[in-house]
Length: 155
Image (tube, rainbow, N blue to C red; front, side, top):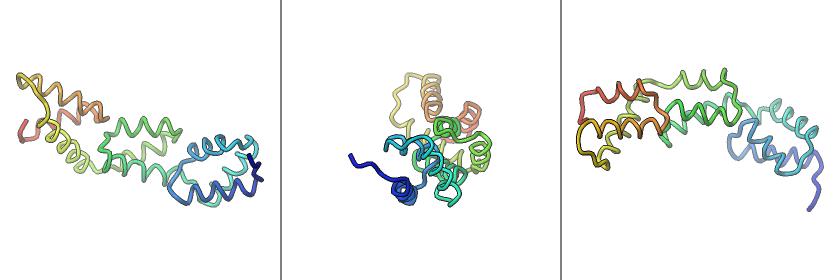
């Protein structure tokens, strides 16, 4: 296996960051996988942050948007995923607070309506329990789920 110089690793890491948005922790893990020494990793990561290849706040903004709109995750699940990526709560909390409440409720409502079609329940209580459990598994908060289920619709 060819040993890369620090400059080559920096270029490779910059190319990696250019292809898609990555957080500091993603790049650190990648550098470790490439076998880069810790002191070299720190220098490369500092340079990537200084040159705006890595920006945790920008990453967090895109992550929250993508997970909400495409994966239909709730705030709790998004928050947990960001925690695992070692995004500071000060950054993730700010981005989660920027989620439009109306859009958030619409996403949850559409999930519940589509899930209801595939649920077999003997009574309304069992149906509601299964829908709540499903929404909780998607990372939505219990009070938001209750609010959404009280909306006048087909529940």
